[in-house]
Length: 180
Image (cartoon, rainbow, N blue to C red; front, side, top):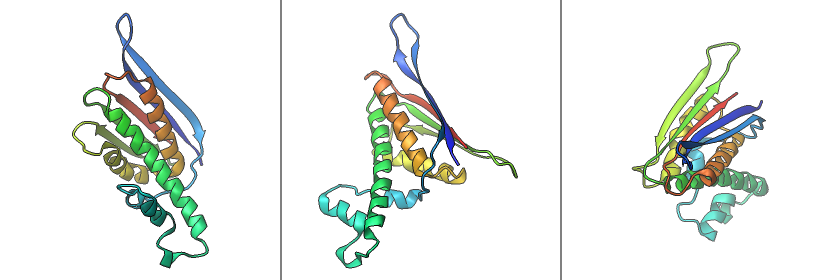
């Protein structure tokens, strides 16, 4: 089952006055595999070095099993998506002063009431905004069954494109809406 993503944000003052606008929309994105937000955050090494990353990927030499290659590839993907989202939020936090990212998730159900989640994340006041952003949106993604790698990949794309469109001295204000 796929999902749709729409993002919009202000990009600062344009010549002649007024604010610029950023829009991103993609329909029928691939879900890929589910993830567990707390487990995902524990997999990201706080200070990546070769030994720490290798142990997170394949485990310690004592626990090396025949399926370690498959597990390792899966963990590399999990770590990479989380890293891309964290980096995107960290880059936005460096723009201007303050800023906000709003994330709205909606799961439409034919058999019961729809599930939804809304998180308004302030970019100021956090020593590690990327990690705190993932912690903030994780429960809402789980509640709406949007905790999959496709969603993380699309959020990372939105953050990267918005960062590119945002002038250096502008505070970010980004709205992301995801539904399926």
